[in-house]
Amino acid sequence: MDKASLRLSGRVAAHGNGRIGNEKFTLTASTGFANGGTVSLRATPGFSPAYSEESKKLNFQGDSVGDVANISNLSNIDVQFSKGGVELAGQNCDVTVARDHSEGDNANPSGVQIKTNVDKVGDVIITAIQKGHKTLNDEDARSENNAIRIAADIPLSDVNADLTGSVDYDLVSKNANVRIGYHKDDITVKLRTHISQDASDSNKRNAKSTINLDYSGLEGIGVGVEVKDDKKGHLQITKDDFKLKVPIEDNKVNTGNASITYNWSIDM
Figure 1 (cartoon, one colour):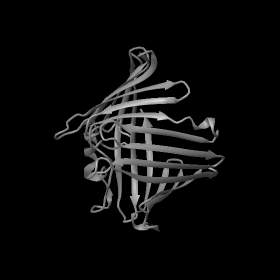
Figure 2 (spheres, rainbow, N blue to C red):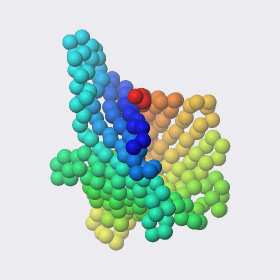
Figure 3 (cartoon, helix red, strand yellow):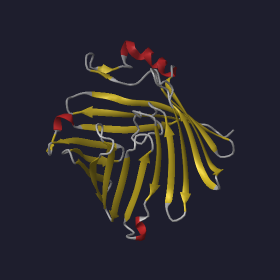
């Protein structure tokens, strides 16, 4: 078995309403297996650094310093196995199997993802997940339903070298996403159209669009804006591991819900 790696990571956020806290705290351990495969375990430590508004101090200061020992009490354990170079139906594939921790009616939902490259098309990805699964879900949030998704590149580079495209379709919900991107110098434009089945009429489809515009011409600083067709979105400025995000509602900037986040990680 290959040498294992251990990483502690988190996300600290300060919000426009004055709330400051550690919103994410994760321990990830990985090691190699089966000649090139990887097994990863992700868990939430029993202690997470935080600032108390009531006591006006950190939760590991003074009499609370002993609480740091709870960091070894792991919970919400997710497991993932990945292996590249697997031959399936004559195709060279990367295979990932993941099992998440979850309680309730959909306890410990699993998912499988197979990725391959097809001539004249590009990457093709097939993902099957159970309701409540998060690790292999598109938006890094728990899936609301069982899903079997097929995603493929659209070979737009043959038309214009600056264009990219992809499409994915869920065989269960019949929902689809079409993504078109344009990148030239310091400017990137992305259009995503989500096509869903109407709740009251199975023969009707609804479409919602999201546009992202990003500019990276400022040295070390990224500037972006996202706008949806319901007049919601956000402005975003990034610098290294810091990100300022300001929501947009009804075509107006909402500074009260703005946030500054810092993502950090330590390899142990």
